[in-house]
Length: 286
Image (cartoon, rainbow, N blue to C red; front, side):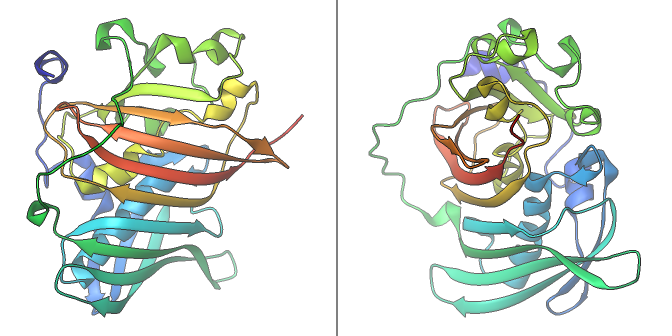
């Protein structure tokens, strides 16, 4: 724990970082928020799904009486582009320990018509109020130390046009999941990496929403290439992460009909499972 945490010096603070500025929504009126989607979080020309989820997550945190996403499920309807967007939220239910809300992000097409990009349903609570009791059989992923792992700066971008996103991240991938980068994919559908924000900002529940969707897709280790767009993504946030880099492990067991699932676990520097996710993604075959 202490070794991993000490390898990343904290520079930016939570609330005052590029990630915070680029995910900040401006309330126009109750339930309606404006934002300019940053090109810095794009892959090719589409905005990263985890970044979008963090934006809607922050809008819902403002609209609901509870601060933290516990479970958030998103359906990606059309690809989001850098530029102006509107988020609309609805409060579905409020309770003592949990509240539920939904949100959608909209942009305008070339003809001025409003297009829904992503729709979310989420349950919020207060992570700080949860008991400390943990009973689990889950174990942190076995990833070599940071200095024995490799990042995007050590080779070509895995997807042409992906450098904007990776420049904002600290990614150090497990060499055993990098066969695709050497032309020899393992076929196992696994990806493991150390994860952080490039400016050293520590993590909170909203950056966890980014972490589950920021690694190269497991499809690369299955011998496939190209963009792997998310169809649906559900994230469970389990607790507030400790300072320091995260470890992210993603696995795929079944690719069928041009779709695959990705199951992600996110572990913090205190060896706690802080987030889990599952997504359905489309892959290009052939």
